[in-house]
Image (tube, rainbow, N blue to C red):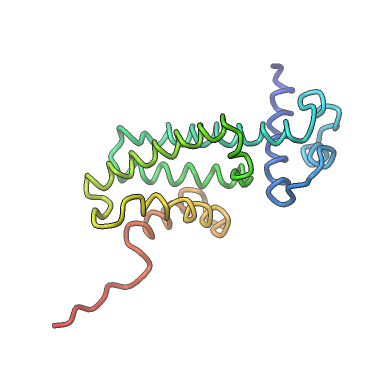
Length: 185
């Protein structure tokens, strides 16, 4: 693909992600305008809105896979891997803010998502086994809490860089939000 075509595709997918997050019924013409390209450019690549939407979801999952790979969840020290993962996913949530649950009916997306969740769950078990996370919590509890924390950090801590927002999430996850309870004597 030519460099300008690659750049245009990235612009269309990024604009599509932002616009579809705000308005799931955004038209191809509106997305093309937001991307600064002619709508014919978009229609040459995508026959319809559903194809464009599927491409946005694929791009999001590509970015999630890259964030997981960069975090080195299996090799890096658990605290380092956790921070890298959180920072990477916050950045993905900011760049690709679309709600992915709409695409879960598509088997390839559903399977891909399941593999990514399994990879993170394996890491969280490793983090628990190595003592970074509490072992007395119900199975899967941290994996249930982490995605909403990541999403809220991406959206609500927009004034912070992804690394700074990751600091907040990791601290919240590891230390909670309360002050230590005074122990009765």
